[in-house]
Image (cartoon, rainbow, N blue to C red; front, side, top):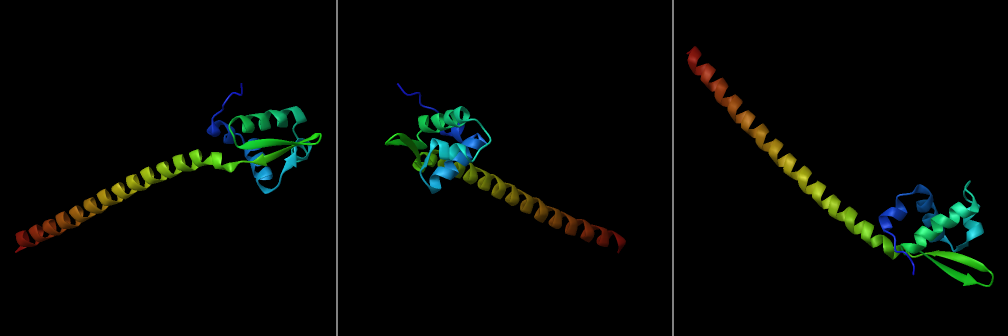
Length: 123
């Protein structure tokens, strides 16, 4: 039985992100992918295994060769999470801006009242 990994775990590693980038542009066999890196073939195979286990790469056998193909719809989970974070931070920043504007207008009103009070005392 295939162990299912987390998509976030897969994209956490820069080598795996680069592998995804490569195979998103073209189908490559394992040797073709390994040529892009200074890592050993077994190391690249391990990265590809993780990407396969989380569903971001599928491997197709063609003759004696195994070709990797990107299946990027698995990244929808990541983009959904990023979108929720973006919405949260936009709301937070908007709320802070509103609060700062409120403080600034209170300070302006308070400053105007103090100047009027000082002016009245001088008369």
